[in-house]
Image 1 (cartoon, rainbow, N blue to C red):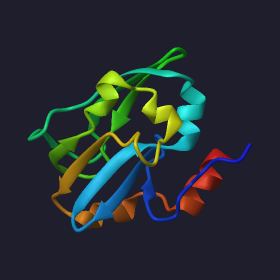
Image 2 (image 1 turned 90 degrees about the vertical axis):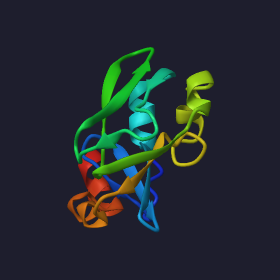
Image 3 (image 1 turned 60 degrees about the horizontal axis):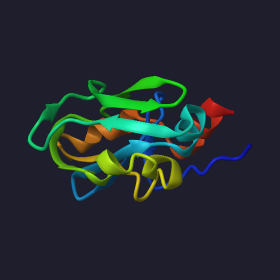
Length: 127
């Protein structure tokens, strides 16, 4: 099976993606992760203003099959949360790299992104 793995972002081994634009990092889960989870029924995310450290738990995603922790790709302050997911968690399944994004973090240091996987390395991991 082939999964969408955009090469404009970095990936965590735990299947989150990070897309940095002007120091702000948008976070979601990968196409592979949403496929493995099955139908997403609930997402728990931090609030705006919360400060996260790289690799900290940032929330929980629950599907009909499993409950999984979500991890922060970078340290920084949460500046936006995709509140649409609270009413429509299925957006994660339908569009994991678009409308299914989870939150945005004002990164303390975007150099932390260098520790993450490239699209090619992530593809190798899930192969």
